[in-house]
Amino acid sequence: MLEIKKFKETEAEFIELSRIDNLVNHDSISHPDDVKDEWNIRDKSLIRDRLLLYKDDTLVGVMYYSQGRNENKRTTFFTLNIDPDYNTQESREILYERMLKEIKSFDSDKILTSVYEHPNYHLCQQFLVENEFKLVQTNREYSCDIRNIDTKKYQTLIDKLETGGIKLYNSREEMRDFPKKFPNHYKKLEELCWTYAQDFPIPDGIKHTRMPFDQFMKYVLDFEENSYGTEIIAVKDGQYIASTDLTVYPKAEPHKAWTGSLGVLKEFRRKGVATALKIKAIQKLLKKGVTEIRTDNEENNPMYKINVALGFEPVPFSLEYMKKI
Image (cartoon, rainbow, N blue to C red; front, side, top):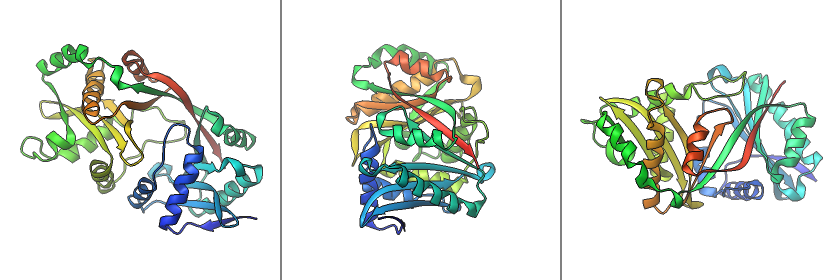
């Protein structure tokens, strides 16, 4: 018999959640400690939960869902992962219908999820289409073996930028502990990220929202302590003008880095700053033994051209689906 049980945040549940995720994930590995850490630093001012689907005493599926922030407070973001052996119409409907019931608590009026163009997600994608979800955004996904990139040939670009007053620094290793040289470091970093993030393409009906600074700091400090690949910041005359951050999960995939964000302020674009950030990040990651970088861009975002020029190759794209309820 299939039944949904309440998520109790136990060690056994985090282990089981990782197991289910890894049965679905096509190119990443989930570790229980990372799953637990991500849950512990969540923004508790927003409604967020997991619905656990059991067959007798065995976890066979999970529905992750969370409430959006500020202007998105009535939007639900969700992920549906089910053990392939139990990925039936019944399992999907039980979890989906229960979620719809739960999100009435914040009067949700739209729901959004993403899947990949990969066989592991075909049944879920079919379920979305059958339930009248609309495809609202396609994202190019790329992977690169960074050992094949000749970083030396980009040194001329980096030298040119530095001659023009644009310096590139490692946030954790060269900036955070030097307040005299980099005053208000995290305030400036948050302002920078918020400014350029507003230019990132997102589906119509979803708004860019700014998290409280204390929550930003929770994420940053956790990143620096537990999953710091690297973070490179471009500075000109004391102004933070561009940055990129890459996450590495040492317990799950120590060889792989995931791009969190990369952005440049409008007035400094088309000068090679984004490419220089990537090269500096790659150099740092190679020294740590990282061999692969994963990244993504909305399909019409010109940033993908930089990735292709560096040698990134396409992997299954991600598809975002939304439904108004």
